[in-house]
Length: 162
Image 1: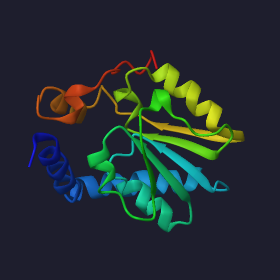
Image 2: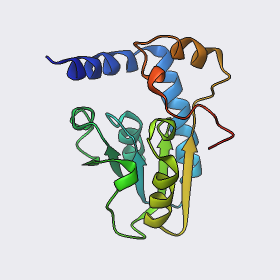
Image 3: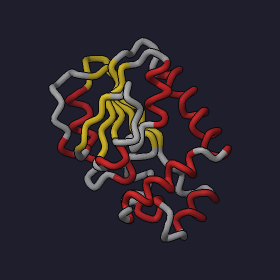
Image 4: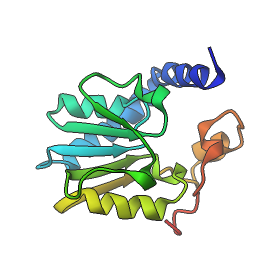
């Protein structure tokens, strides 16, 4: 098993912890409420699509975009998955009712280009929902200091700049 595959499996194991299950549940509830009236959803940086799988159970047609083929291989079958960078997404214009970034925008190399691309794939009156990590939180500071944490690789911690 290579290092990337090992990290992916470790991530999935951590996702089963009660803490993460609670976080995911709150994110799902928030998204379901704010996606009312939407059908076709693009989730950018979805990883193994844990949240997206739950959104599909609520009747949304979800497409997950991520740079990691390994992460997407763990996605539920009911999720359409596409390997690619947010800055290079190649979906037709006006393809989605909503584009969501769940704790992923801050890890995108060029978030401005990614947001421009996101705007282009939204239908008129589409929704863009971005959930960001809070760099002021104790959780963030603790994880940022841990070189083994995915948060250590964050590219854009300055929320004001975003």
